[in-house]
Length: 219
Image (tube, rainbow, N blue to C red; front, side, top):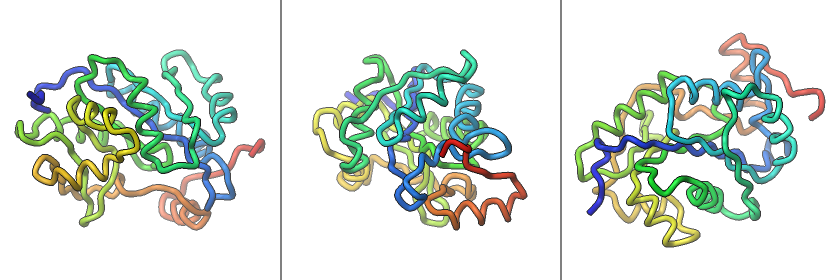
């Protein structure tokens, strides 16, 4: 029997940062510096302020550069790390690698993207609250902003088991096969759907926010 999402207590977080950043000049997008901090560091501060059972950073392309950056963080931000050996494949492989790294008693999983510049602790906490309030028949929660799916998404241990039992299966495919078990949470919060894929995206964010946004000199 599946565990109702609202009873989940041991929530683990996966932060996906395995991409090549092809449209960003093949640079690690999560190392883009916003107001003096990288996107990844800003995200980790938000995650740590909420508090979770475990957090795992999934790397692939640019793993060495990201690991060197993470090694400079204070101890309170340190997180588990795992490297996807085949990051050229579908992003489902990164999810699989991350799920395998989580503790077996994890009751729910939150998946975040490392290139979301606006996500903060309140956004993360709101997703947790919405997920824990799901009726028992729902096992996945996806924030929907103007009909567009966003992140973070959350799902329970039964969905994790389904994904691990079928290597190569994406969460999107699971959702398509289980529409009545997926809660598409309509919310008016553009943070959930904002990411950075191109230099134009970066320029637009700088104009809208007035933030100082730069690449580290080493990149």
